Length: 112
Image 1 (cartoon, rainbow, N blue to C red):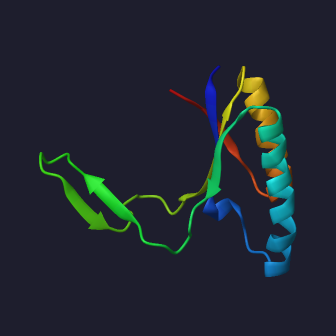
Image 2: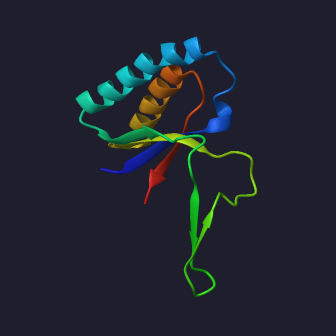
């Protein structure tokens, strides 16, 4: 079966109170448990927003590690879920469940 990544950019989350975030956690966990119960779960997790970031670059012919992201966009990955489903329609179903549970948009892409 194809695998799909369902993800969100941290900027899509928006500004909310700590209480609001605490209320979403159980909903998001329940959605992930539903994916697991369906036998379509591969992985899910959020990223540490203010943790260390390391970039690895070997394009010069020499491997270079640097601290920090070097992307041109202000958006960055906030979290992801990987599902093993029969088709895009089922991946969209899970993305919808996660979007409703989390309270922010999700994107879906097939993994090669």
